[in-house]
Amino acid sequence: MMRDLSERARKMCGTAGAAVYVCESGDARYQTSIDWACDASVPDSPFSIRQIFDWVKDTGDALVFPDLSTKPLAALPASLRNTIRGFAAVPIVTVDNRIVGTICVFDVKPLSLGGAEVDALRTLARSAATGESPREPLTSVLDRRGADPVIARELARAKREQRPLSVILFDINPIRRADRSDAHSAGDPLSAAGESLIRTIRGSDLAIRWGREEVLVVLPGTGLSEARPVAERVRAAMHAGARREVAVSGGVAELGANDTFESVVRRANERVRTAKEYGHNRVA
Image (cartoon, rainbow, N blue to C red; front, side, top):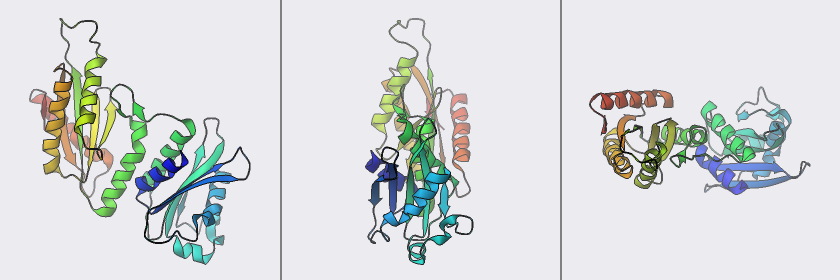
């Protein structure tokens, strides 16, 4: 569990290292899991970051470095400050508001961590504390809350590595037929469409239940010209998988230099409307 958390946090924020500290039965001792994926040696041992974890645990606040002028980290040894060039930490809080540990990501190179990464770490910490499943039961894809960490990870990676990223928004409308039997409930076509979607996309792609009858697919490392045939292939698979009892309309958009995730999804949604205007079961 802890190993999985630290690995997910590191990959999500694109950092060299991550650590998870969890209190043992409420006392001052910790269980620790460190995930380090870098040719450089682990900086001063992340156990030296204990001050960070104690501060987050005591205050309940997220902490982002560099911020030595406003946080009590000015007391850190100069060797540590010079080695760890950036980190972010958030508390793990249970449903009854007990702080039972922290999640921290860190690196050995200049690093900029912003609100998106902190929000993603908070979501990861919340799911760890509550044991909530990030999967949406109807379509077996991620729900919007469970998707926050992975969306933040892919946005951060696209920004750092200057890689393309595209999204496809699908509107899936069940077709009402007078001759449908009771065995075919309204939810069945959506579930079948979701299963077909999962089988069709790559393992690195993200599928998210975006609305009542909407599924968003995030394609890391994929530009607009490559995303369009992917969208058509997935649309056809969902339509066929649902026994043609759904109308599937799709809209494709690529993340631009000045885009937020919300703005690129809005553009995809506009193209969904265009596809529906031209008769459904198509991609715009």
